[in-house]
Image (cartoon, rainbow, N blue to C red; front, side, top):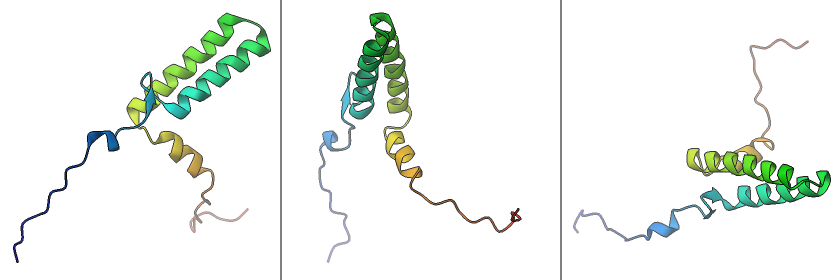
Length: 90
């Protein structure tokens, strides 16, 4: 029996995040929906475009920094806080 590692080729597309214009797709759709809602609420195209632009820039930054940041933020709200034995009960 040989101790050589077995190499399995994997396509690069499997490990890439799905993006639209360089932004993770969920963040992009949030930016589009919020931009449309702002446009409808204020009745101003400029306000809708500014909201979309701001959220798009945030989504681009978040995707470049860590593509899983949205999943981490949403899951962190469900986790219970840890008991700190050093704190005194008030």
